Length: 236
Ligand code: 6PG
Image (cartoon, rainbow, N blue to C red; front, side, top):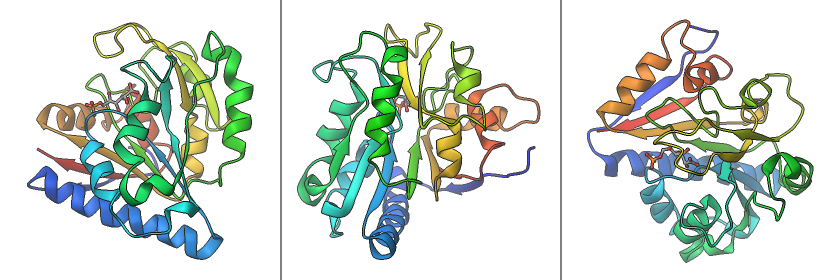
């Protein structure tokens, strides 16, 4: 184990997990708005956070003072079915949350490596450190776009990385599909956040995460767990 031990919040049902995480996230965003006049939330794509987005979109906080940005993105256009930006806007930019400011990562650059400066300029306009960061995890142990053996992984996970956003190219797998070019928050940007949550469901991912948290594991989710304290939200 590293210096930090993640805190497990386990629930009997996904509904209970979503309700608890909604409350915890709203608290963080409200605190940001009250203290600084604005708050920022970095979110992941995937099927797991979808019910959280739906539930939180009805919450009565001053969403016009909230910036919602992506944790990571596949390098595809927003009209692509696997675009995280399109997913985030579709799932969250509605009801009361429609008033939030949504920030995606994709630029017209052909490859993410050419877009790093432009994306960092864009993220420079977001209030940082993030009040809350929502991570997911794949069954390969990736989180954000920290894919095992990705090109750019060491720079992305370097605790001294000065950039907020970094480019990676994943090794193609069933989990990445064809979209291996990625932009991601760096581990150092996540380390700076005021609060970080890893949200997962199901026995398989629980098992993968337990493996990742074993000493010496090279799985990116486990490596990240040694760099910062985070809360794990899990339900079957
Ligand atoms: C991505 C996805 C991904 C996701 C996990 C879990 O950008 O590749 O957003 O990182 O968080 O693969 O996905 P599910 O929640 O759908 O299992």
